[in-house]
Length: 202
View 1 (tube, helix red, strand yellow):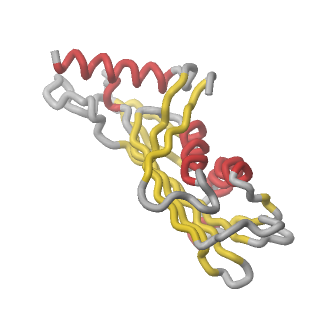
View 2: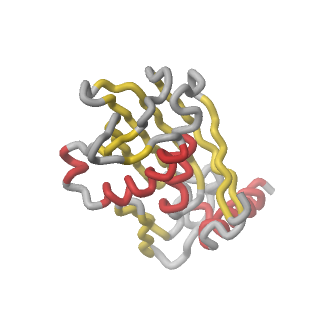
């Protein structure tokens, strides 16, 4: 019975990710933020800042494009010519063992597919003939750091973490940036859960 329950849950997760989130999915994020901003300035403008490694990463520009709508909804406006803040965004994605994986199954917990990420887009390679539905599980983390210019002092820092089955970073990462920026510029103290609805009927 336990194996059947795991299979049903895993099949539902696989159907969701393979359908491109045609339905709805509640993306639960663990968020923690730190702020020294009392109130936004009259012109809450920003420019993106990149570390040395990010400057040589072709995926960084795409990641910033995924984060920009969340920053806009939080009240920030991009203006590279006259920024009040600099903003640095990062993201990390890794495949992890699904909580619904059956370690006693005929192929073990991972199944036959290998999933890797190049920047914000997913790439799927077939490592074996039998894909396992419960092998699709990912841990993602996004972070946003704001510095006030010209002092370059950090005034806001936030991160969001999610574990789940949705495959496409182009869907998940923008929602995670929304979760990370919730409450800006004065978010609640301490760790908290922020749910974001994904899908056709938010």
